[in-house]
Amino acid sequence: MAFKSIRSRLTAWYILLLGLILILFSVFLNYFLSKRLYESVDNSLTVSATVVATSAVMKFNRSTLSGLDQIFEQFTGAGNLNKFYRIYDGSGNVGSRSNNIDASKFPLSQIAYADALKGANSYETFLVDGKFPIRVITMPILREKKLVNLVQVGTSLEAVQETLSNLRIFLFTAVPSVLVFATLFARFLARRALKPISKIIQTARDIGQGQELSQRIPVFKVQDELGQLALTFNEMMDRLENSFAQMRQFSSDASHELRTPLTVLQGQNELVLSKPRDPKEYQEVIISNLEEISYMSKVLEDLFVLSRSDENQILLNCKPMDLRDLVEEVCKHAEVLAGDKDISIVIAFLESVTINGDEVRLRQMVWNILHNGIKYTQPGGELKVSLLEEAGFALLSIQDTGIGIPEKDLPSIFDRFYRVDKARSRDEGGSGLGLSICKHIAEAHKGKIEVESKLGIGTRFKIRIPSTTSRGTNEHH
Ligand code: ADP
Image (cartoon, rainbow, N blue to C red; front, side, top):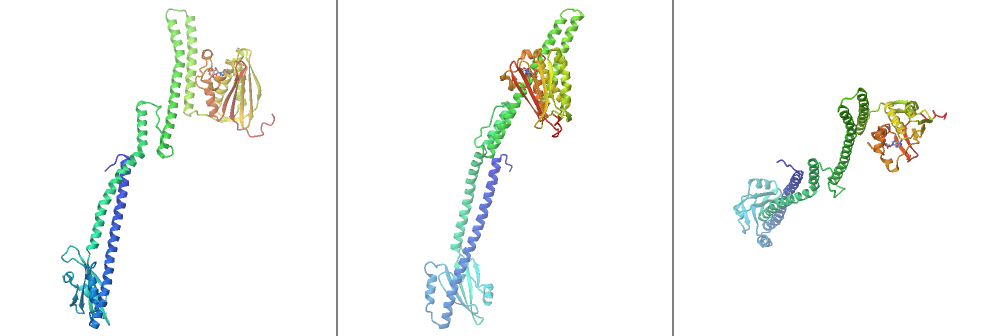
């Protein structure tokens, strides 16, 4: 029979095992008890036969019957009703016998006689007419190795067989009752123990069907396996719920971010097409369209980088490189942009630091920070750049004298799409993705990025990337 549930399977195994143990126990009990009882019957027959034999010898020797009668008396007396004896002479003729039961109804078997001739006792069981068999000992009396007499003592096996049959009745009723009771108990226990599993199944099913990700399994006993399972399940749900929320937020932000330039594009194009215009006007609109398009491609590109980093798939093409060269080069590019805004870029200190890094990504990161510095600093301001090696890290610091970041916004500026002043930074062409990409790039290099800022005074970004410069190569500083 196939059991579908663990509960039935557990119960079935338990009952099978218990049944097997009880049956084995019963078989052994029956076997040893009957062996013991039959042995004790044989022992008592041996003792009785010895007494009769001794008396018989005395009788044949002295031709007096004194003492023997009392012994026979004892045989036939209360408590010994089932014992009887026969005495034969050497050739197998009956000399005397007790007359309490049908002592004549069983034979002196050939085997017993043959054993007696050899001087050995023999024990036999006969079924005469009654319900119960009779156990008989045949004991030889030898004199000078010659068989003089034979003593037979017999007894009914009624008591033994009744005891054994009572035992069997008891076992045949007790074992099944114990099994029935144990089945019920085992089912009850299994149901109780496995109850949390039904809860887990139910919750998982609810979540699967209703997408109710906030559901959790109640955990009662943390220590046991099911408690641990429920706990693990709940933790998994926490993570899932979190990443679902993040995904939802991300896609809604992304679509919102792309909707604005699309609306602008649509509006401009519809307007310009509403009536004939001269080529100059078309040109202006197309230029503006291109700006929006390039903004959208940048957002899409950034989103792509971020989505790959979410799956920990930022593939770095790392090789040993001097970070100083990279910083110098990016600063040169930034100077063009800064010059337009009358912002000066001051290189305070540039130490040669070898790191193992991805040039393209690192350039993107340094550019983002410098570009932000230029965007959020008023004309006439200054950007200070420094690079040095500190405690096994390349420490790049970019400090501006710009508008600063309010303290409450500081923890969030590395979040996606986070902008301190939405309107302003959109004008500057920022999507709010730049810093979160910087953070991912720094972390992908096993480094980190930090920010300090004072509103109205300036902002400082510190980036640390593990260096591979061997100690002592920079001693000239
Ligand atoms: P954005 O594309 O809007 O610049 P970022 O992720 O690069 O997005 O930056 C997030 C926000 O952090 C910006 O919108 C801006 O408000 C703030 N921020 C970044 N850099 C600076 C800076 N150097 N000075 C002041 N504010 C900054």
